[in-house]
Image (cartoon, rainbow, N blue to C red):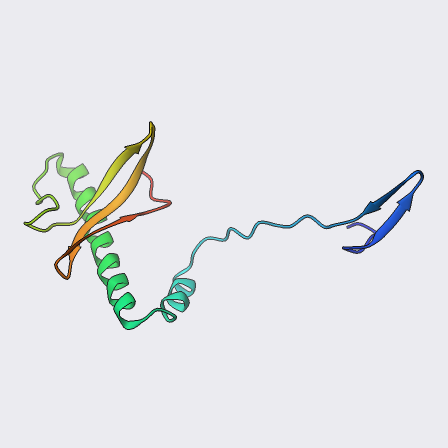
Length: 118
């Protein structure tokens, strides 16, 4: 702990300094409670989109785990036949980055899923 308060000027010969406390980065892990609080601020349509996205994410992760166990592709790819999956993309030589791909309400949806690791 410093003996100076934040924003306080102090003098040491021959210079004057302005003390500012270092800011801590608040990168806390998301919690279910925090996500639900944020979801409460969405419109009804946005909440339905979120629900569809979460269901697709669960299905895609389960499908990916099943594929690893069986070592074969037996599910439909995204497209007119439907299906959900996680696509790992290389972008500008970096990656792979996970994208959730699924159809909902007649529209093709694609979301980047930060923090998901292969």
